[in-house]
Length: 117
Length: 114
Image 1 (cartoon, chains in turn orange, red):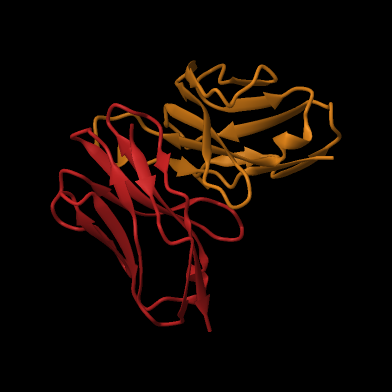
Image 2 (cartoon, chains in turn orange, brown):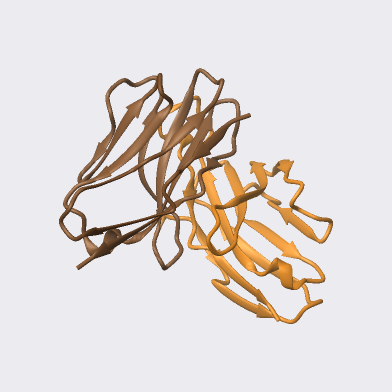
């Protein structure tokens, strides 16, 4: 399977605990994105990497959220001191930076569901 | 600012019928791309079809086709011979060369009835 993969697919955690999600992008894709989606809503942009550099963070991403992509391949999204409002699906996506063509298509993983109780 | 508007929160059609989902957008960019994504109950966001703004020809992918009206900034999705598996949320999205983000519409819930 050469698609975007995310792990874990589901996570239930107690409020105040830390959680970490992992994303493996499509091989050779140099751009990686994290989005958050709640029921009935479209995805909300969280952050974006080109290779290992984090180039943009949304205002939605509070100080409790941190994302890394240390070697420009897989990425992790950590949420510290989780709150019930963090319950959502966290989507990872990737694309290949080119000047046009299929490189402008962003491909999504299956998402990681977080439930904070 | 770039915006995407989907004015149909929900649509329902019988299996085998044709259905059209509407999308309008606004951008000042000259080079941009438009997408329709499908999100079934399994929740994975799946690319249905894409359209480059510089191409006049409407994109088609099997039963899926678009009606791209650049001057009107309209990008509708037509699904022919609809199938039960087409039941999903459909999101219209916009991306420009100068912006790595996707700008999303609010989505249209499509229900295909047997």
